[in-house]
Every structure is written in C-alpha cells, then in structure tokens.
Image (tube, rainbow, N blue to C red; front, side, top):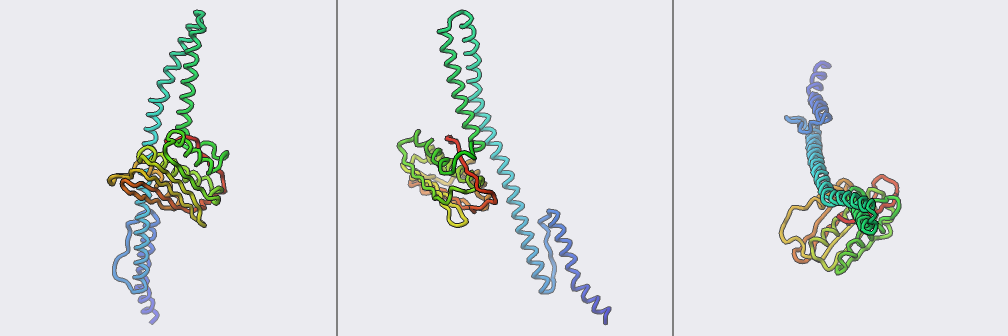
Length: 290
C-alpha cells in the first residue's frame, strides 16, 4: 500500500518537475517557454498562471527591445542635429574669426589700427554668436542650472523665449504650488514636455493662444499643453520630439495622450507619478528652444 501511494503521488507531482524546468527557462530569459498537456484541475490552474506570466514577460521584453531601438534612433537623430548645427552655425564663424584675426594682425603691423578695429569687432560678434549656439546645443542635451532655478521660472523662461519672438500669440501658463518641489527627474520631464509642445505649436500650428497647465493631484502630476491652431490636417506619424517625450513619460510609469481637432487645435496631456524615488531638487532650464 505504501508503495502504491508513493507511485501515485509521484505521478501526480511529476508535472511540478516540468514547471521547475520551465521556470528555469524563463529565468534564463527564454520567455517563449510554455507548459502544455493535460493536468489535474489544481495543477492546470498553476500551468495557466505560469503561461500568462511568461506571456506578459515576453511582451515586456519585446517592449524593452523596441524602446532601446527607439532610444538609439533618437540618439542618432540628436547627434545628426548637433553635427548639422556645428557645421552650419559654428564652423563658418570659426573660419571667419581666423580670417579677421589674420587681417587685423596684418593691419596692426602696417600701422592701420583704425581699419583693424573693424575686424576686431567682427571677431567679437562672431564669438558672441557661437556662444549663443553652443548654449542652445547644451540646453538641448540637458537643461542648464538644475540647482539654481525652480520649475516655475524654468517654464516661464521657455515661454518667454517664444513670447519675445512671437508676441502676437497669447500664452497662458498655470502651475500649481504643489509642483514647486518635485524631484529632478520629474521636473526635467515636465520641462521637456513643455519645451517640445510649445515649440511645435509656435512653429507649425499658427495659433492665437497656447495654454500650459501643470498640476499635481495627490501622487500624480498632470501636464497639458494645448493650442487653438490648425491642428493636424491628416493622420501623420509623430515626429522625434513627440516620440521622445512619450518615451520619457512611459519611463516614469505614466501615459501620454494626443487630442487633435483639424482646424481647431492640438493638445498633449501627460500623466505620471509624482514620486520618482528622488529627493526634492529644484529644476531649471535655459532660455532656449529647439
């Protein structure tokens, strides 16, 4: 009788060996592993739960691969943009500085200081232009002065950049007091969202009004940027900027949504947890826009 019970229990629990093997396969990163075959009702529930878990892990792994590929694409796009800016905006001015310096030096040797003064001024103007360009490129890589200014001033600076250049557009900015002490990661994410969306609205939507709203409701932060411009006239693939902020928001555990009304405006809404596991650090941004 003991032998019969031992054999019966051994056969009943034998599928657990298969479950252990399947768990080892999943632990090694082979998420396509599935348990199959007929089992007792109690074990079939365990098999189905395992298969659902493996399927979710497979989906998460595929999403991570897609995000990594998207990240590489965005990095290459940013490198290309920086290379173009260096070639178009910085390199010609370096050449001009070299020519002006050589000319000014020759004129000084010839005792023609008055004529040399104009070339020296040209060098000063070229250096000032390159400083602005380099600051703009640095700002695109990472907001400058994270420990110096708060989120509110950073957003106001970004909107002010466009207000000075496009004064015919009305800008309305609302930032709740609860958003003043967000962590560095959350603050940088908010800044990038506002920077990209306001820039897109000004350059492409021909709006009369752009609104920016940043609010904190309990454990969630909500960022909305809307305009009353022309909207997207037909479905188009989002550009790298919108794709980039979408990846930022999802990395924060949040979600991003677009609202498009052709001829009546475009809106972007992002919601993500306010707690990122970091201490409260002030966030700022340069007065630039891409």
